[in-house]
Length: 102
Image (cartoon, rainbow, N blue to C red; front, side):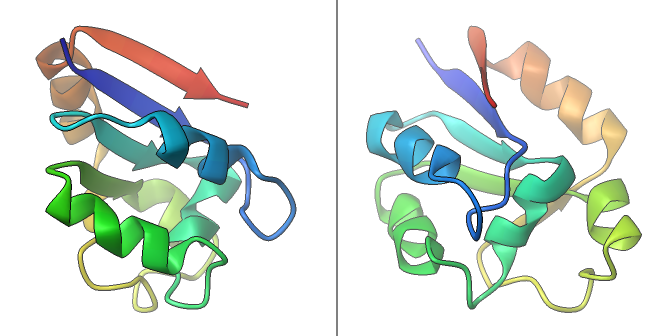
């Protein structure tokens, strides 16, 4: 049973992303939305933890519209995939549950 985790808080201000990463299991996916997209930066407090997710077979995405709104499109770390709204829906359908981290 896989879970899509959505995180909307900046890791520079909250520990929400860290809490999410601590419970992720192989086959899960993490989608950074709203201010959560700051977690996709190479300088993010959770950058090395996000890199480790690939070894654990956990995909990481950042929502394109939120990256654009914050001027971050060209600044995201390697290994973070960009998701449009269509991909967001596809991820929601592909996973058994959705866990929102606020």
